[in-house]
Amino acid sequence: QVQLVESGGGLVQAGGSLTLSCAASGIRFSDNAMGWYRQAPGKQRELVATISGGVTDYADSVKGRFTISRDYAKNMVYLQMNVLKPEDTAVYYCNAKRLLSDFTLYTYWGQGTQVTVSS
Image (cartoon, rainbow, N blue to C red; front, side, top):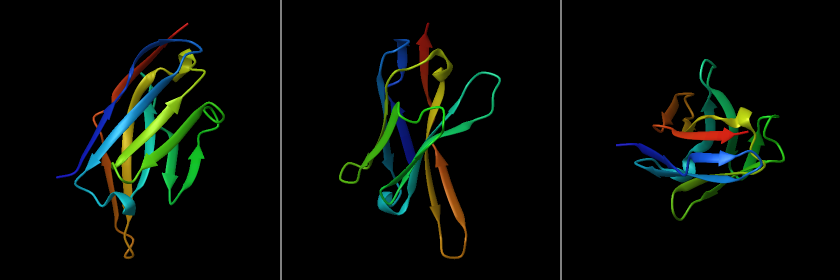
């Protein structure tokens, strides 16, 4: 059974920092691209950051402030968030994706963790 369990969310003042963690189980961790998405109230879920084969990618809105990383030994993914802004307030979701050679795409989601940034 695949499980992605996020933790580390909370309430922080603008300018502060938080680190989100995602514990993955039930998947071949090294075969999956991992990512963080977020969804603010009334908005669509959006990509925040991804990491695959050591290559990272970020949404323009978080470049220079957020850092995604993964620990293969612990099957963990992290999102270090610095200089947080009120507009970063959202539910943050951990995501795992694996594309097979026949182009079958497997994607999994965590339950989400709330991040609230006060002004």
